[in-house]
Figure 1 (cartoon, rainbow, N blue to C red):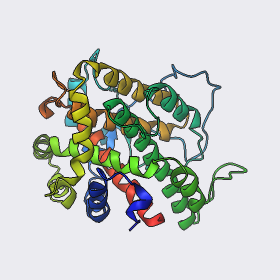
Figure 2: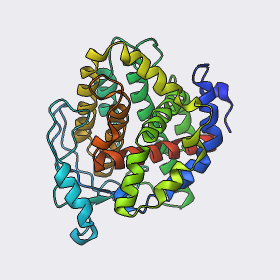
Figure 3: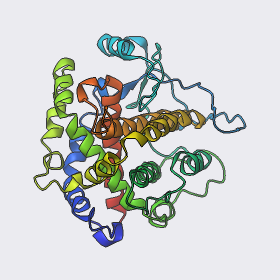
Length: 351
């Protein structure tokens, strides 16, 4: 287990970080059991959507690591397909804007996150420079305003993706698999852990901050998720809520969401800026030119958008009613929590 001081010096967050370090292994295993459930693994996304934010040269990803194919139509349960169509509405000022469903669904069990060799630095630079609030530190070092915590959450998302890449590199090495392409230089997991996470300001702290936000949002949606588990026969969901981290008696992991909500409650009329940015965060994923990376990027950004909607949405900024959350939102939220738990498991094994 990593030394706390190597993760964060923020006294407000340290108890929650310590709780996550102690309870993440259990939560991760319980979330792993959901990976094979159609409700949490099937998504209809527009893989061919055009990038509207960056000038780009067309990059065709021909490697096995990048390309994905939709599942056969009969593999998608009709209740999932029907619910996605029923809930597909255009909300002008919503927190997220998911692709309209088509007959094409992609299975993240078939195309798990990992290392593809794709360089997404131009997209991340755009996110940190244009979607983060420029008046606050892009790594979340600023405090005292919800906009600073928004930046902190996006930095945590970047850390999550970095940990996925590092884990993917290690898995390729463990499985004795070749790396696609010629002259790839970033294929040492220890060097990449140092480059992508340990040398980036507050990267580890922000990963834990994101994890706390996702835990708080999933806890808020508990009754709705358990109702969905009964409707769709997903009994594994109850096991997730039996985990230590989703039954934290000290409330230590709620520190991030409490702080975020406290700052946001002082500026409820300004939250339209957060909604606008989370919508654009999802759409910037259309600029990712690795299809597998685009799929997982859309899921992760929609998961974060849903978490913020549950924590800060509603008419007065105190959180959206979970009964109004759609299937795709619930699914991406839980899947993103799993991704974050997996990222922390990777970091703990590297430290």
